[in-house]
Length: 156
Image 1: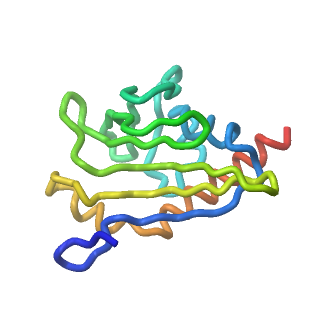
Image 2: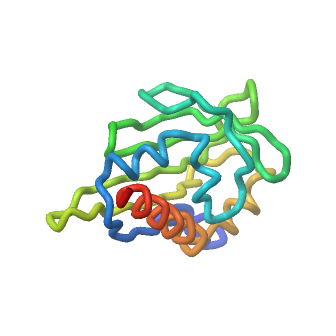
């Protein structure tokens, strides 16, 4: 377990089994325009369409509720299995924190979805308070909303 000097956990996770195939779930994650539908932190306002992540090295933009735009640099990618990105202010290198989604098919047809926020390499002091305040419960809210959306999409 990574922790900062105050003992705050720097890697938080949330998981659950979702009654939908990984392909359905991954489409909701890999298309940034769909992310505001299920963002449990209500932190995302919008993302332009046509940015579906297809490979390592892709960059997609999002507008946050505070009006700031983030360029998200894809640092891990495996179609329908794993997607991770590091946010950055436009034109700047990533600040060091990482958002990751992993999808594991289960024998019963469900998919184990794990959402991770890792700020162990965060270098931007201005983002430290927000990073420390990001809890597993906040991530669980996104996982739960994603599950509801994926289960609804999978049943149509």
